[in-house]
Length: 222
Image 1 (cartoon, rainbow, N blue to C red):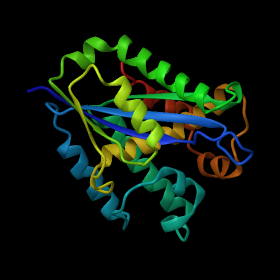
Image 2 (cartoon, rainbow, N blue to C red; image 1 turned 30 degrees about the vertical axis):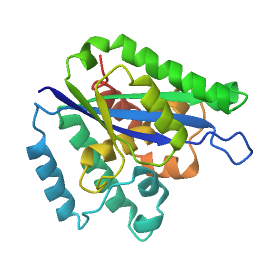
Image 3 (cartoon, rainbow, N blue to C red; image 1 turned 180 degrees about the vertical axis):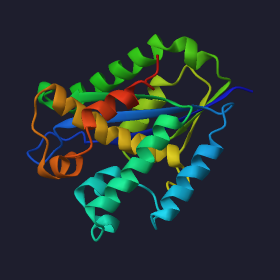
Image 4 (tube, rainbow, N blue to C red; image 1 turned 60 degrees about the horizontal axis):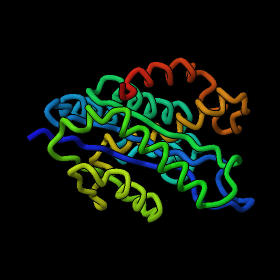
């Protein structure tokens, strides 16, 4: 039985107040389970072990130097990021992300419809890819009920199930989806000539981040 695992993460909110997010991002990591990535995962875990880190990699916190990374040196945080990034490059996976600029939306209804339209367009464009799988397993548990309902709606024509509870630390592909949300925002800002925030500029100052994002986008679903 052909099985596809899809790891989904989001960044942003459906609000339109002064404190609401400017962008809404949904990122996808697709893994055809017939293609083993266990050796790559084992290698990543060993690499992280050598860096004295074995937790879930949360890219936004890593860049912002907060929560569990608050006492880490910049050099160590960059090494953790690089480990996850090159793991993503080497894995036999596909990726995709959508970015909605909320300044062109007036309310939650318009935002919701735009997300639905973008996701349905993606599924229609790559229907041949999705249709070859007998079962699609979606990993999403961030608790945004609005996005959960959207996912159920757009995937209704496929044989799918949604797993809402899983170990984020063990599911390294989910951590790629988390990273992709951050990099998609950085890429969007770069393309729109929007200045990165101080934390992003400080973290990515020596990373040649635009080139790295282009390298990662070579794994885009096509």
